[in-house]
Image (tube, rainbow, N blue to C red):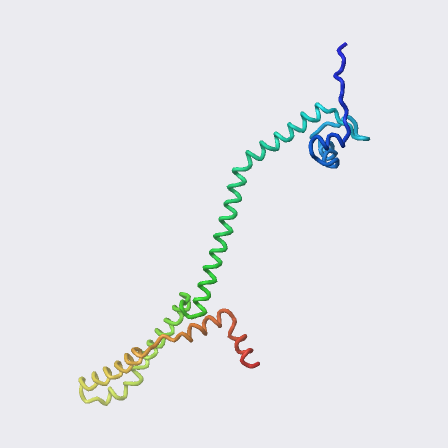
Length: 191
């Protein structure tokens, strides 16, 4: 019968010094099965199998880092890029909001609303023409006289439209209303 290999039993303190760890970490490695313990009360370790097991553990740990590192680095880079893009987008939005508040830029829906108001004003002026001209045109002696009356009223409407000016206050009022600042500013004015 062959003799069993002789064990070289060492304490937790010795293994801790050998691996440059503290005794608690050595005990954790033994409990998790990373290194084999010959006995648990008190902990004793067979030196050669313990060293081999710890080297194997370190090798596996290093290999897993090598395989994960490119993916992890790429994921981290993607995350950083996404965060930078998000911050840049937020900065652009803040810049556009500032320009809007300063009246240097207007939202398309505000431009559309103001333009629609102008169109409705023109429409109402044109629709009022028959009522304004009916009596005068009916009393006109000739077609040329009726035509001159109609033309004069049309020129009045066109002159009113020619005097239309961009009013930044209209847009500022729309921004305040949309943001709900109209009431807040009115409250401040009351104070």
